[in-house]
Length: 71
Image (cartoon, rainbow, N blue to C red; front, side, top):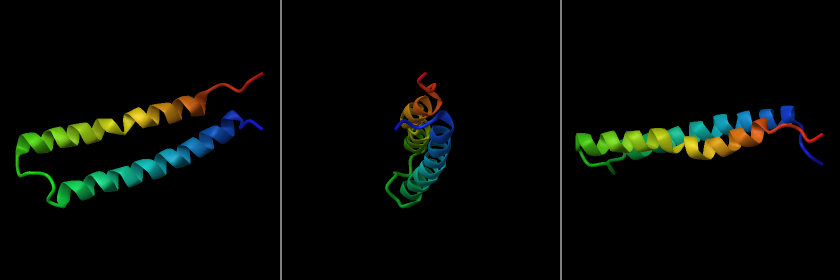
């Protein structure tokens, strides 16, 4: 049985919201836990990398969500 586009969008939205929330908590925990050196450049690149890294897995989820239904 294949899922319809509406069901895929619902599942994908829930997974994306929960995943991004957990990911942001993880990023914030690492940032405040003392694992990052007290160097502005290192912190900048950490936040830059962490801010972009979530988009790559989300891309595949979004592509799956909006794939048209088979005829």
